[in-house]
Image 1 (tube, rainbow, N blue to C red):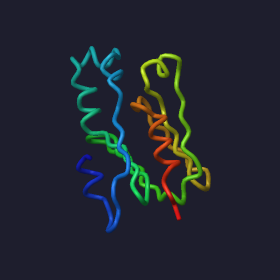
Image 2: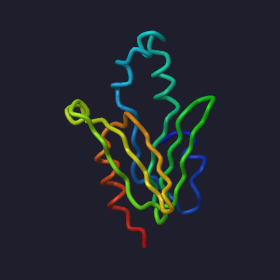
Image 3: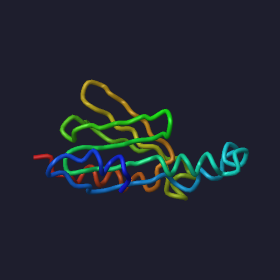
Image 4: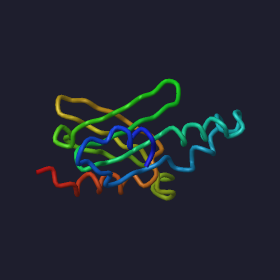
Length: 124
């Protein structure tokens, strides 16, 4: 796993599932204009993990956006995929917490596996 997730694990917490950005980010106009440097940095600085206690997500290098939510505070993890996303196995995940907190993360590889890993965690 990445540096951020590893450095923010608490006592007794282990990573159950980790995801990454899909390679489709290399096929955007922004990627071509920046000679594939922007998506490389985006992929290198993005971490998506489900642990035994929470969901931890970090994106960004200079402007950092993080989500660390206890599993018991998450109502659902939604997956949105376009037709191309279904074919190539990428999509967006939306983490919805109690109280209406809604965080969307795009271009996740295997988003259905991310949701399945979340659903299989025993919160007890």
